[in-house]
Length: 405
Image (cartoon, rainbow, N blue to C red; front, side):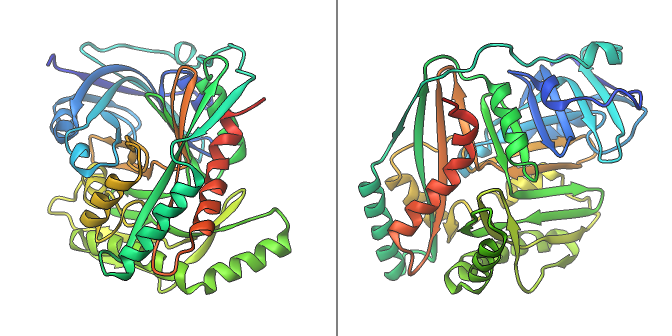
């Protein structure tokens, strides 16, 4: 591969980039509350296993020196852990970044140094195309058949096959014309400002769940498991949240995920803080149990954000426990290929800093078609009708952004 060079320059304080606008229809973006990264073009594609070596080989001229500057790579790992190890990653040609304090920058990466000014990068790449106005929705598996799958899984759990398995549903949306990705992202940004809005080669979503971030020697994960509906009525939602915190079934499901995350991260850390009890993470139409796990990494050397994501993926929140047995089971009964759904999507820079979210509340968009997904954690005592209702709640996130009659 031709040697690459990366050049990062600050943008003027009044240039505040619109990350979604820069990503447009075919760029990559990771954005939350206006903070994050947006990428366009491809300087190189490399295997995930070669990302570290590739980033290390890039000559860097970086006047900003923050996480996400200099050499950088982005990827959307598939759910299948075997496929994740041989997935591809992108070295983008141009990257825009913005921090919470308003610091912003542009990075160019290529076989030769390119000087790009603010006027060239602060361009709106969103399509002006008219959105489709008619849609058909088709579940891959009928409600009755899916409830039967849940009931059989509960029986397998009772027999001791596994402690938990996460089963998902797929709904295919066909539109009257091509779905406009930039419009879907803009709606997700408005509907779910507390989530990370992402777009990666047609894989889009608003993820509420941080798989892992690494900034310097600090590692953070925020696993979610256990869900209840929210109505928008403050008193009713408070009571619902109290029921969720008191639910033995949901606390067990959540505890399996937190224990897994802590067990994976602990060998990398000098210290790891794992709260004794979860807290409520409220979204627009649901609330989850969440536990913020944070540690200080050993420097021998410290693993990159990508290495940590590969070590954690897939967690019991999207697969089950024991993981290998749960993955094999759900692949045999779900009735569709998950692809990148419930995988890990994010970025890593040449220092090893980066962030990966879990690829949920998401859709695969290709022309007029969108594949939407939602999963539920099944444990002993799970009720099939309740689990079906939970998938319907979770599907609303993307349906509200994609289906606009």
